[in-house]
Every structure is written in C-alpha cells, then in structure tokens.
Length: 499
Image (cartoon, rainbow, N blue to C red):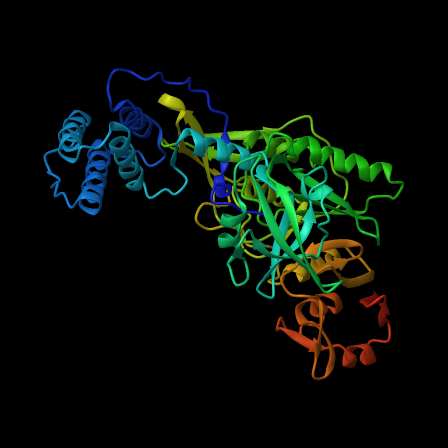
C-alpha cells in the first residue's frame, strides 16, 4: 500500500505569508505567538478564556504526572497576562525550563480547538512534515508491504542504496541487526528501520524463489521519490497514474506522464488516476493538476471564520478529452478530496473505491520563533457543487471494497474488454500494471485453484459471487468459455475476452 505517515493527513496547505517572528525577551514568546495567531485566525473563533484554561490545565496535568506536583487551575485566570504570570510561578515551582512549559501550554491551547489539523511543529518536526509532502525520506531505498505477517520488498527505488545491493522485489525482510521483524506490525518495523542519513544496518533477508537466507549491509540516504508514477495498461488504450502526494513537483510530473502517454503511439482512450492513501499537499499543486483535466472551471469554494466565501478557479488549462476514473479510499484526504470532488462535479471523472477521509479544511504554516511553526486551520472548503467534505468525506460513484477489485471495476467502467490477471512477486498484475496487495490473486484450496472472489465478481460483473474471500475457479472456467487459465513458469494468468 502507499505510504501514509502521521504527517501526511496533512492536509491542504496555503503558502505561508507570515514573516518569521523573531524571539523577544519574554521566555514565553512562542506561547504568546500561538495565542495571538489562534485568536485572530482559527476557523472556530475561539475565546481567550478557552485557550488560557486549556494551557493551564495541560501544564497542571503534566506537573502531576511528571513531578507529583499539584498546581490547581483557577477560574479567575482567563487572560494572556494571567496565563504568563501563572506559567512563571509554576515553572519556578517545578524547576522546568521555559521551552518545556511553552510546549505544554501550546499543546493545551491547541487541544481546546478539537482540530487535529492545527498542530505545533518543532523545527525538526517541521522539516519532517515538509519532507513528507515533498515525498522525501531517509531510508535504504525500498518499499515494503505486509503479506502473511511478513515484510515483503515490493519496490526498489532507482539510484538508492538498495538498488545497488543484491535485494530484489519479493524478498522477505527478517531482521534489522539482531532485531527480528517477524510478527511485528508495519509501524513497529518502520521504527526499527529508520535512522539518520549515513547510518548503516545489516539486514537479514529470505528469498523464497531460491529458498535461501542472506545478509545485506546497507547505508541510509536521503531520497526523493517520484510524486507521479504510471504506465499504459496493456489493453484498450487506458493510462494509469498513481499520485503519491501533492508536493511542489506533482503537477509537472503528472503533465510529463500524460505527455509520455501521448508519445507512446497508442491513442489514449481513458485514464485511471490513483489517489488511494494520498493524504494531500499544496493547494497550488491541486489547482495545477486540475488544469491538466479542464480548460477553465471552478475548483472549490472556501469560507473563513467570518463566513466569507471565496472562489478558486482553474484558468488556461486544457481538456483531458477522455473519461477519467479516480481510485479513492479512506486514506484519500484533503487536496486529494478537493481534486476528486472538483473533477467529479465537472463531469470529468467518476470515483471508484471506498469513502474518502473527510478533510475539508485548509491550513497555513506560520513560522514562529526559534525555527518552530504552527500549522493552523483557516478555512473550510467545498466542491464546486457546494458538497461538504469536512468530517464527511466523498462517497464514490462505484463503491468497491477490495483493493485489486477497485482497479478492475474502474477499467470495466471504461469499457475495457480484454483482460490478463496474474500474481507476480506478490503483486496482483492487471493488464500489465502491478498493484501491491496484501492477499494474492490466486491460492490453492481443497477444491483446487481459488481466486479472489471480489476480483472475479467485478471482472465478470456477476454480483452473485459476492465480495467474500476466495472461490474455486474451475466452475467459472466451465460456465464462461471465454475465461481461460494459462500457466507459464509457475505463474497463473487468467485471460478473459469480455463482451
């Protein structure tokens, strides 16, 4: 599956226009800055008393938890001046440094907003957040997926340390140093794999195709992954583009992929845009990508804390000229939802998959003292038809639960008639394009070879199959003469010429 870190539900970002705030003599400068920014800009229009109480309550709770120090919160403290006075008194009692008390106070203020997207970033966290939006990371250069409780290498990044090593797609990662990864969750494994650029680790790897275990020594490096990747499906002139994030290069890379399809010599008859697990990014990128699909049109409405509605338009774009299907799921958030909703409202695209995340708010990153920053919610956005996205999400036109079946249904709705489906290195390959799936397309059962029921259902358009687990393939081969199973070099391929 696509990478989705805690920062990636990021959201839709406006370019920050505020200038960096220089630290003043006050030890609580950042608390002051956050207080004023939230008071004057946050969508919810909070009251001063609310923020002060939240800050003091957070400090009091931390004091009790860390030092068993009782610091009662007074109902009379409801201004910024009283907050700072109490912070100074409590800091002296607890003998903490000002930075710690500032952090507690800021976290307490933000917690009163009931807004998970308004976040305080330290300088290091800000860098991590920005790197995630730009699809940059420090690592060995491979992507993993979970399969049968094991971590499988599903992709190796070109030019990375892993690319110059013996690692191959399909290898199973068993250890990092002396730490076993067997039975670990994806998050736990990631924690053991991460490290600083330049640091090394010895990985223990098992290669199923050769039934052998070996070790690889790799050095971590900073890498930039492509934001847009894709290729033409092998059948019926349909293009496929997967967009990982809405970073600064997303629109350019999307444009280049479309140009690559145009140069292929094969007429483009449809496009599948994969926004599953894409947590968002920059508003400007969403607008620029939308301009690759339509010449001119309304992208969204935004409202601020005073209810003022502003229109954002796409200008000087170009018509994609072919039907589009957008793959979405619960990880499709923010700018992904904005683009999906806009293209659907303009009749350019249909959505396939499951309901999206429901993040219809826009944030601005505001610089603070000492290199820190505040990501603050300023606006709520709506689709061109005034569809509410925030806390609701977008319901697809074609609701499909299974990951691979979503691709099949998208292609069927684009009138694809010729099919080849197989398993390769753990991926489900659909008309030449590999998709990382947790469960294989085929598996052996007591009744012979079985196939993922949801995939077969959407391939045949037979709702009687149901989106269950697996079904025996033999009866369907018998009842559908145009459905054939081919086996070559140990790989099963289902071939189907539809009507």
